Length: 166
Image 1 (cartoon, rainbow, N blue to C red):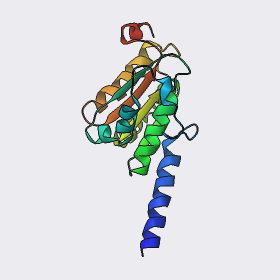
Image 2: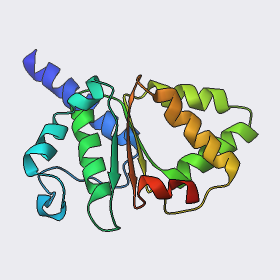
Image 3: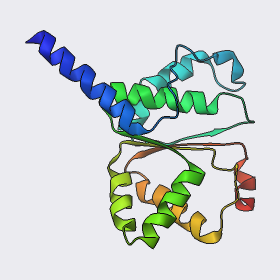
């Protein structure tokens, strides 16, 4: 029975990783912690425990391209999947387009409900493209609806003060 239980747990974990939509698999063990200027390795391992998800806290990663933000986001998402959590990974551009398309096809509410059910939403590359006002409003609504209910990880290369320029 133990073997069957272990097999089912592993199968469930694989399904969660696959349904999360990660572009590739990256782990905490593969992460070069020296790339992060303002984070100690111990803090990264603390984040890897995924307690921030249970506490409904959010993470915003700000840094230049190539600094490991996406790697860390994916690694944290995979850790959450391994702990049985539901995760959705998407780039901001893809999410904005998906929201617009859902609205055009009269299924925006359904998509928003699907997104609201995931324990951890990872929005990558928030500031790489410019968004029109409508796209920005839809992205904001998704993030605002999750406030204090579910966790979000956002990665960007812009400081908060520059976000209004997106």
